[in-house]
Length: 76
Image (cartoon, rainbow, N blue to C red; front, top):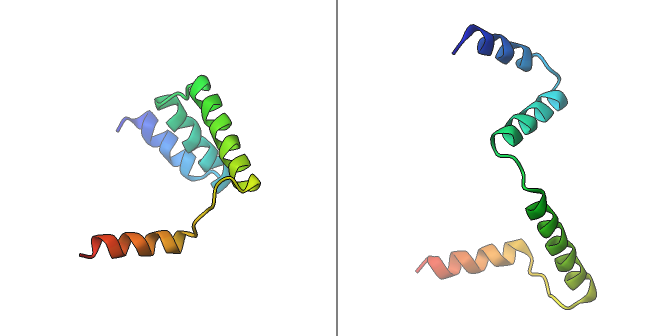
């Protein structure tokens, strides 16, 4: 690790948790830039799924029920 990197690491560690979280988010984004088109498509899909749930078109299943079925299926 270079001296500059060590200094940055030390400075980052001294930041309040909210600022460190933002820094981590920005660093990760710089390594894997988001694709605005994909983000928009996911937003549309999420909104469609919410509409389906709220309209009753789709029935949700509680998580504990789902996990119980998975455990039952793979316990054999």
